[in-house]
Image 1 (cartoon, helix red, strand yellow):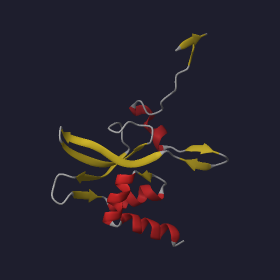
Image 2 (image 1 turned 90 degrees about the horizontal axis):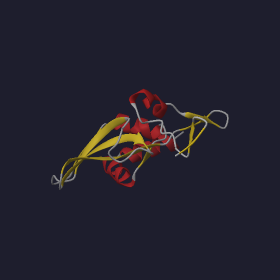
Image 3 (image 1 turned 90 degrees about the vertical axis):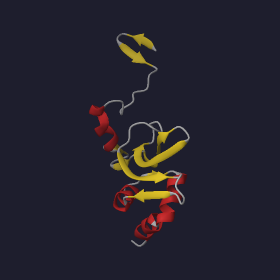
Image 4 (image 1 turned 30 degrees about the vertical axis):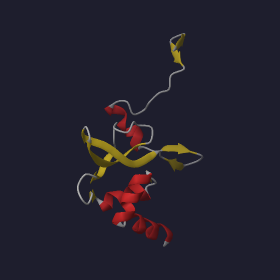
Length: 127
């Protein structure tokens, strides 16, 4: 960090470091004359104890750490039960997919098993 006349240079600002600025995550950045861009991912957040993982399916800023701040919880995934238990709020998942959130590879597979990706693609390409 270098200081020149009360300005700090060489430091990236993170807009999602405190609760006051959570609205910055939810609000879209206006670029190129009104095109909305939002870097949001649907991914797994690890919970549980050591060697007994349990996951929440969350919507989070793409820049946030894996177990960091989340915007909303969409469902849960427990790989230890036989067969694996998956609980997903289908309406929330479809809403976020239609708003442009990108699912991770694992979440995409879980959504495909539940039939959510098929519903999303049918809604997207039927227009």
